[in-house]
Image (tube, rainbow, N blue to C red):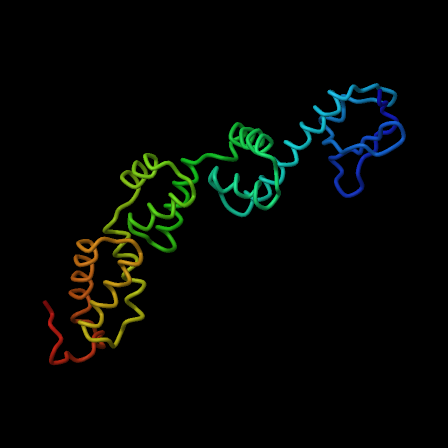
Length: 224
């Protein structure tokens, strides 16, 4: 049976150890798993397979943590990353993801809340758009509806989005403003009723601005 003949810390990754069996490099291990080995130790094929399997999970875990360092991710995003980018086998993926969840790195509820809050702060979206985006991330429909109900002020988000966009529409007639703003809010996932209410509110707020915000009214420009 194979015998451990050398344990050597890697040059570039100091937390990993190269394992040599019968004088030849066999595999690498993280240092926490490598402490159980010693020079001269005899390993069965089953023990070797188990060590390699453990290390595959650790490496998948570390790769996922690196991916998570850029921003929070959903469980589905991590699965897609490990499968598509790293070609990790399904059983190793699942064990690595379980470790991520246990360690607090992965939580779909926390991710969905982060996504909604980030959108609200930087690019306000309506419920339709948020619902679509979160479904694409693999978030459970029930959780999506709960968070949208509890965390999204639809009118406030629509007003924030429209106010930022409205600055680009200075010099348009009211009708042009209404049409372009309606299309914009629809693209952002707000319903017709909410969009109409916010547009009316903004037109009223801008009506008496100095210098005039809107261009002179055209013959076919109907305020109603």
